[in-house]
Image (tube, rainbow, N blue to C red; front, top):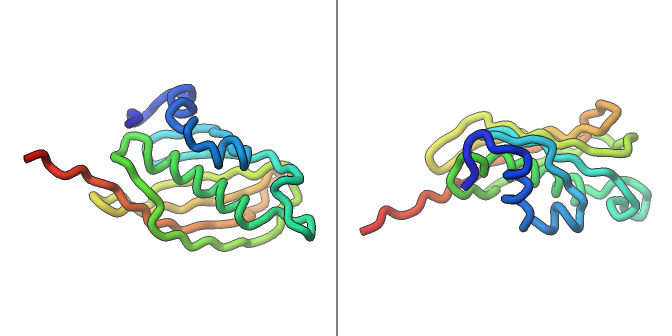
Length: 140
């Protein structure tokens, strides 16, 4: 488990096994601390659909990776349980930035908002997430 305010190097080491996000999709960690995470993605042809727009799955992957940062730093293992994402407009930029913030933290459930913007400042997508915190069973 990561401490509440780890260094960027500690965060990168911890999340290096998230190969789909980091290697396949090209997500990069910008910053993170307990309840907050920011990740970005330089857009390339691999992220585009047949019509030339950025695929919703690429946007979702970036949002989910920022969420992973926000909900696993300084916490017990936490996973995305329910996500509702709204795709608001097409990007005109060369990069997407996802910022995840905890709105309400509980023992088993936590609630996050993730905003995805592009490097021109446009709000591209917004996600509401319910995350589940796995509390280990007490040892007998």
